[in-house]
Length: 273
Image 1: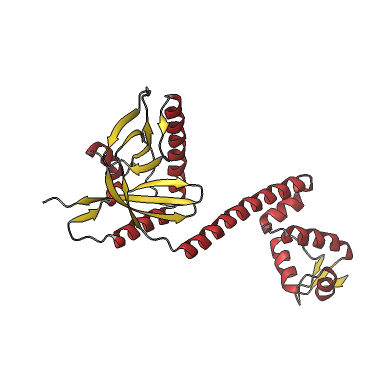
Image 2: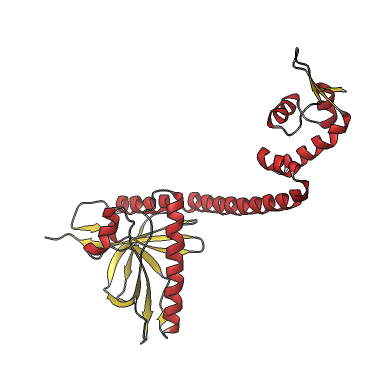
């Protein structure tokens, strides 16, 4: 029999870790003195301690380690699945690090630009949730991305030439489009792309003429999030504060999704007299 201190030295596990693993059922001593609470271990338990250490060193949770030990035939599959989860986490962390470096390096600031008149193909995206949390925002992104891919493919099949990247904007053109958001059923979005040339589009796709206009734009590195959407609005408003003869129409904010970030733009309009 080995005392907890002897077993600790042999397995390179602290007594605190051994007590924790005992509580979690991963490494139960062969004997616990009812009077003193002293734990004793058998030499044969060194292998179990090694397996626990190996699995915990991978970053596996206690719950997953227990499952791997209880189901040795599935242990390799569980390790492989955990490895894939780690790869996804590392990729997400790498992306976040790149975005953080880019934001603090470039210090994104709004810039004015002139947009010439152009022909635009539009498609309404229905059924998107309000985006009240990260899960809803991700669902909205998935629906908009699918609609954008369909829009691009349809434009190409119609023989039209794309003159720029597609963008998305909240559908705020009429009360019918505004009503779902007011009722809590989720907003509608519109995906659009500038085009040139004659073409025939299937039902559900609309061609409209966009007038030349001035706008303010800001590019924020990294993937699109609700926080970035709101930050774009705040930066555009601060760059072109309310007052004077013109204002930034945030209600018509549009976004272009790039591989390395999000370009948010809003039209600069004259105040009605």
